[in-house]
Image 1 (cartoon, rainbow, N blue to C red):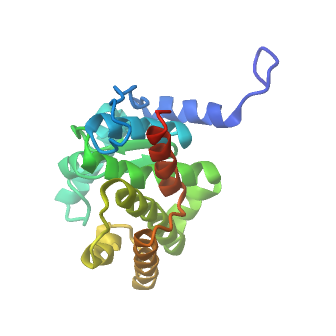
Image 2: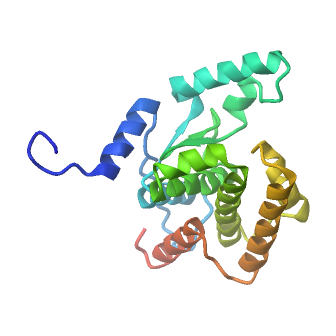
Length: 231
């Protein structure tokens, strides 16, 4: 119990502790809301979407260069890369790849607001939702099971696919779907094949207007709120 005798809000306590420990994480700033309620893709609108998603999924977004832990991981990757390991270099890790730890999303350093940032956030913030759904089980399952890791990644990518379709009217090419699990998730061929089948189904469903992932549903809710003048 808290010193005042009030019950501790465990999700809030865990969120604040994780953000403080990881360092440098801040919620997306309040954007300037455009006057056009049908504007979903300007930088200001996408900033408002990022804020909405952070609030909905109790997540925070920051850049890797702002976190001492991420800089340390990048340095370790740099040494491993020089020794011949098949991992990104320190520069690549910090500037090309997004990483999510618990409820904190780390984006590549120096990434401006815009479409590319939003597409990364759509995928990564799904991992924050997965974490809150099972904060003890999710990290262990993700790290220990290639099959579960493939499932988590395909669900996160489904959110990105659905969000991209709703916002930009774009679906991934067959080549992009096929290459997704080659991103370095350390899964075997069978699990990778299953993930690709799930993503093929996700793209087909999105094209027919069927949105089902938590992130996709949140994007659609945000768009409706803007149309009604509520954002």
